Image (cartoon, rainbow, N blue to C red; front, side, top):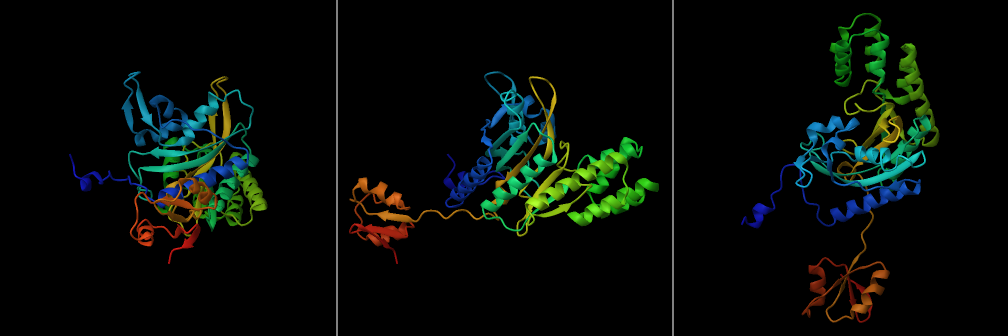
Length: 384
């Protein structure tokens, strides 16, 4: 048997959450869910493991290389461990809740697992919490989800929030309207994602002007929208920009302190989005706090496509900038104190730590266990 030093070694990308960090994350999750539920979102709890073909259906196919797989010894079918809970909530909405009234509002929280961490997020297991608004594809639905995410983040103490907006469909629509072949459109999309102006310089004519203009239009929302409108885009692309303008106007009216930026060429990570998408950041945070946007699911009862908007918040990034609620103070209750008194002390807001054997020095025993208070002589005393 390996000694404890070897057993404490975990695989790369995994870690133990210890007190008080684990308690802090649990309290933050509870606060997020409370805000989601306050706006009418009902909680669902899908399983950690599902059949592989279910997790890879629709937008799930983009997560294929990140999924851990195992054989189900009962059914002899391949199963997968979820990499993203949005896919599972979409499945629930399309099947178990297909007959439920729309718009359908669902929320969730749980752990996800990846084969490999990224450069910014090295963790391979982390918590995820979010909401899905299913059955409506509109600016009003997009605004509700974005503003609810911002409200929930503020509720856990996140400051300096910003949302970076993008429209993954804009570049493909532009390429089609400009008559560009698929190969060229793919190269342009890659160049815009990489912010590679050199690659875009090789594109001639009106198409080159437009795509270089898209790259230059990134930045503060109002300025970016003016730059996009000055490009005089073809009809379908102009309609997409008009919808983006509508969302910006709506969000600014309802939450003027939420900083909005626009990156019209961003695509990576939003492959399955069918409308406006967004990424959430905090001014003093590292990495993204969450991602969301509009997408489509296929209903099991009719086979029809159904619009949805959702957001997923990443607890590993969020805990770096969140303010976890204060934990109740620890009160040492010496050995021999009646157990029946504990409930009353707990009702006063203390976490009681009971002595299990007679103490030679009660104060030393309390300090040893990290308690700030002692119950003695029928009263609570602050430990020096």
